[in-house]
Image (tube, rainbow, N blue to C red; front, side, top):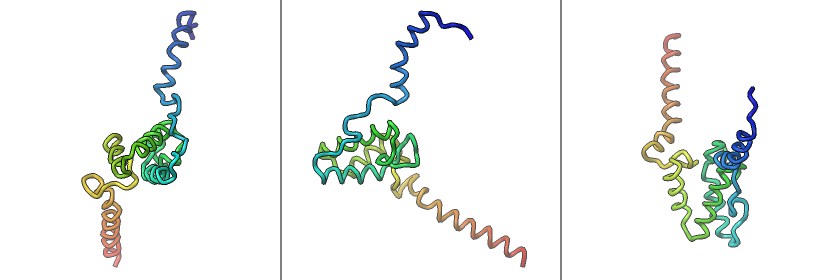
Length: 138
């Protein structure tokens, strides 16, 4: 392995802070982990945060995730609630920004309809296949 030399080390030291910010490990937004002063607004923000999926860890809500992206999303939700926006408007804004997948409760239209109907369709397909298997053995 080659030695970097002084110039290479200097370039790495300059680039390192930018690389860490590009990976999402920058400073945590102010409202990410701080509750709103108004309990009613904090309750509304918490409900919205539990309805939104973390796009980084994917299996948790943004309220439960420790991922840097979830912290950014929590701060955005709290800021919008503090600014007086309604929870449905915030949820819709997040869907427009990150896609339908970010919502734990997709709309019953378009691709969301497929998500709601898929379990029923799979069950019907399984019953149809099982019927065919039992019919052959009889």
